[in-house]
Image (cartoon, rainbow, N blue to C red; front, side, top):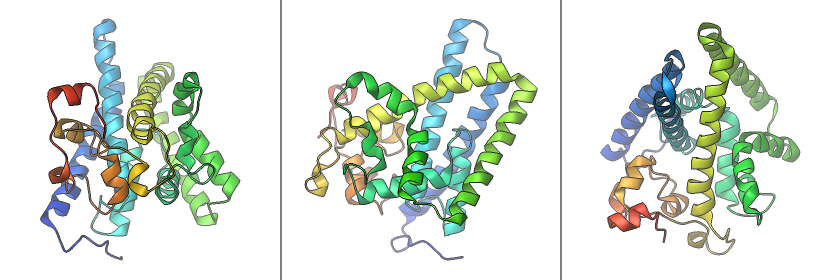
Length: 264
């Protein structure tokens, strides 16, 4: 098992790995466990939807940490925690990891950056593109022949795991109810993630200097609430820093900056 460079054994990195794993364990249990709760009335249904959406959002943020090796002390450990994080979200780890690393290597460059798919002049297309991003990633991978046999085998096994997990939940709670709740939370999750923390953090889709291709939001509140996704420019320029290690570099912000989602 090869070890991942931990920047000299930083205590902050160790803290980040442990905290990220706790978030994955807690949010994963809450997300999957929520299907066994039967909300009564619209208020409880709204709590159920928003709660599961936010849990899935944090799970995606932690999986994002894993694409850069910040979920484990070894490559194998990091990979398994990444897979576990995305299981309740219904996204295949190997697809997410591959496309995200290409996004970093070719940020905002058409055809080369799979996430540039969100750069559309027609605003009405944004919600639809946000929802179908995982399927776009797969089409992009096939079109560019990114996967070899090993990755396709992992992809198939991951899809099988998703079918088994959600199939078992559906068998116990009812397939119709589970699918409706899953689909609505996925729609809301897609919009929250891709509009707020992808389109707006790459607003303009510059292909100039690296530090102009993405933007940061202000304030630690958004940093903690987003699992580090708010510090997008810093993450692109220093991907070796985990989200906890970035905390000291988050600029101070007023409540107005936070509430208006001010970016630099």
